[in-house]
Length: 433
Ligand SMILES: NC(=O)c1ccc[n+]([C@@H]2O[C@H](COP(=O)([O-])OP(=O)(O)OC[C@H]3O[C@@H](n4cnc5c(N)ncnc54)[C@H](O)[C@@H]3O)[C@@H](O)[C@H]2O)c1
Image (cartoon, rainbow, N blue to C red; front, side, top):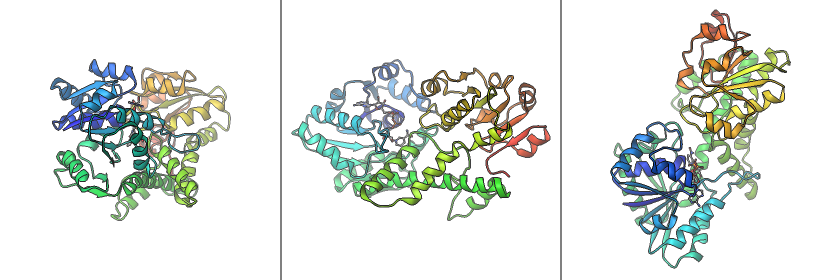
């Protein structure tokens, strides 16, 4: 099939590369010329494991192209995926200006019928809004289908190639059939392609993210209780996760969730609830608990140093919102850094891939180190913020020799408290008593 993907970010580039990998002809469009120029030179503008191989292969075989010209891509394609950003406004509602502009550009360029697939996460009812934006700009017919994306950054390629399910929101059977045909190579093992109405599809996306975020916040609250009354959240997680009614995913206590999806999608759902006057108390509580959680480690650091953080050098391992991505959107590290700086501390950070994106997000208020061990040299404490694999088995003797105080704040519970205490460290995890 001939496909255009408008918006070549974390979702659009992965979707485009995966559709090209299954033999389709794909044109990826982005309004950012720097991004497109980099892609034309064979450089991948984001960090996402496995993506470079897919893009390289598809480019070499001429199945993927990159352009800033929406019109060219629309003219050459029968299916147009919309994957532009929908960042939050101060009100919590998603900012739809990029989607509006992109869909108007698509409508103006249409030379006949087109299937418009909305992959951006958009407020409930947006399929109708998109159609209303397009109609004044084209005399040609089109359908708008809602096809929310569930990939996770860090494992995005794998998630896209082997999705748990694909959701197709449309009232029309022929549109569903076309989409099912496109996705067939990705669901050969029998994972479902679920057909539903567009409103349900749009809401499924928000419901999934809000539910997963709620699980994390629930565990973080249990962890806080453990820190007060004893008990170990890691044992409790294993005890809960082995219950098939609960399952083991998204039960990890830590420094709070971040990223481009959970915080924004929860805000958007809450905004819809407010507008419709439907109380969404569970979702609101998940959000409140998460805001508290991002400051939880700082409270522990403050407690250890008896409130005197002025001039203390604190080393952060990991800045990205999670491992295997360079994405800094809503990263808990940013809140931890703000709090530490406000208390007068000096912060040094190291992240294996997010140095440049962190510099954009955080600025020059902290020192960016070239290695994990540079960050801790002469520091007063180490805080593990993002659980990159390379931090899992560090040289603890070297850490102890480098730190002025042998103290580790483990924001992801990846170290053994017993081992660290045996090695002479003070250890603080999340909910480990
Ligand atoms: N990142 C994720 O993990 C993820 C997962 C599922 C769903 N989503 C949703 O997918 C959407 C895209 O997210 P993302 O993380 O890929 O965003 P992103 O910011 O990485 O990419 C969006 C891209 O759209 C481009 N763009 C903006 N206006 C444009 C226009 N008029 N024409 C062409 N390009 C334009 C931007 O330059 C940018 O490169 C959002 O709605 C998001 O909520 C994201």
